[in-house]
Each structure stands twice: as structure tokens, then as C-alpha cells.
Length: 133
Image 1 (tube, rainbow, N blue to C red):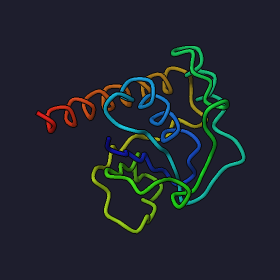
Image 2 (cartoon, helix red, strand yellow; image 1 turned 180 degrees about the vertical axis):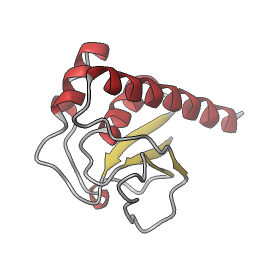
Image 3 (cartoon, rainbow, N blue to C red; image 1 turned 90 degrees about the horizontal axis):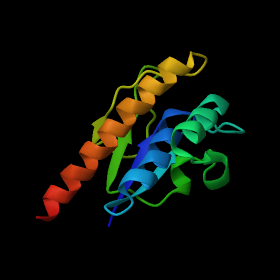
Image 4 (cartoon, rainbow, N blue to C red; image 1 turned 30 degrees about the horizontal axis):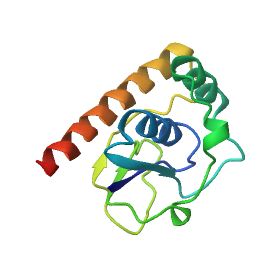
């Protein structure tokens, strides 16, 4: 099974959402991890609250902010967005989803980013499935 890493600088918001949705929507096709080149003491509390409301997933119970070196070597590494500068992880990114950071913004903005991440997770799931055929 492929390992997919979702990478942001701080591993506190978009990458954590992608890890949670990857586990929720595609765990039959790939293993999901998130990481950053820096960490935060906790996952973004708006992300935690909204993911819990939308998907009944408590990210604080299953995830924590971690550095890239703390996860298994991924088969696929995806940058969540380079609006703050892409972190260096020692290899080229396979894709850059170029998503804006919703931190500090309204629930509507978070929900829009979450919907886009969900769409991309499902596309990635289908791409990986089609490779197996």
C-alpha cells in the first residue's frame, strides 16, 4: 500500500485536515501521514472543531503536529501550498495543491478548503486505484 505524506510548514491545519480525510476516505488505497518542517503545540482548533462537526473525526485524539523526519518515507509527497514558502523535505514534491491557509478566517473559508481537500483526496484515491488495474 502506498504511503502519502501531506506537507505544510507547521503541520497544524491543511496537512492535518488532509491526513484525517485521507484516513477517512481512502485508507483502503493508501496510508495517510502529515508533517511539517516545524511544529505547533496543537492542531489548529478551528480545523479540529470543523472536522469534528463535519465528519465526527477528533483529530486531537488521532493526530499531532510532527516533523517530516518523524513519518515513514512516503511514496507520494504533496505540498499543501507554497503561499508561505515550500518546506524542503529532501526530495521533490510529487504535487503542490496550492491551497491557501484558512487560519484565522471564517468557518465558510475552512469549509471551502476542506471541500477542496476532500475532492483532491478522492481524485488521488482514484488515480492510485487506476494504477493498480
